[in-house]
Picture 1: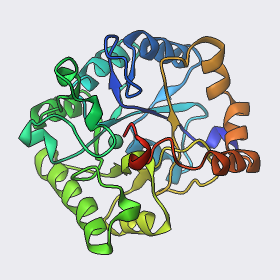
Picture 2: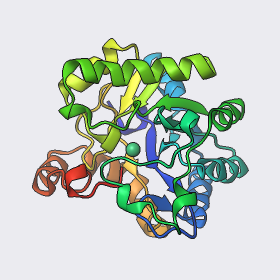
Picture 3: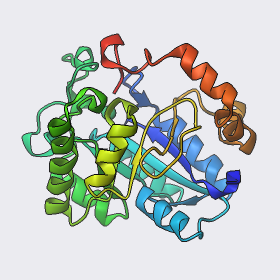
Length: 267
Ligand SMILES: [Zn+2]
């Protein structure tokens, strides 16, 4: 499949110019990234829209999907920034949090919660998620508890996927996609997502060799991705390199230590 037939799927977490965390990109960086893609003529889609257009062979030559994992309240700030550039996004919510209102916390990010950062870890409420939906956003699942699905038993895996999808559909009317916590999935997890009724599902991987509806790769974005670095990252050549065998080798060498909870994941 030629490069143009894939959407550019970008992965973010929080957006903050005052929180120095690997989970956050600055507002300036997000604005600069959106402005660049707008100048380059990228059309914005939600993940479900991109999947449906792709299935029908109608994906625009240049399309971008802005995705935000976990459901930080700062996603609302991201929505304001993206809206200025004519984009919406897709937020993947961890459904145990919108109703409880408790700070976002799971293995790998507990150390982020301090008195100074508590505000950054506040979750979107169901009302916030409904407001995003009303602004053209898609609300997808990031499971119920942010579980590492590759380690869950079959029943636990099915429940995380099914119960989160049901909660979002009950509150917001629909839930078509899921992002795997820690960006990690294998063939069993992908099959379970398909079985649970999801149209598509996202990983978070440096190599983009695997690409089927329930293992869609994404580009993890940081505040450093501006200027020449951003241009290289989203260029057709950059995308082709990540899809190559060399990228797979690099990924193997790096292993998964960058995002597994045991090694200090950033979620
Ligand atoms: Zn996450």
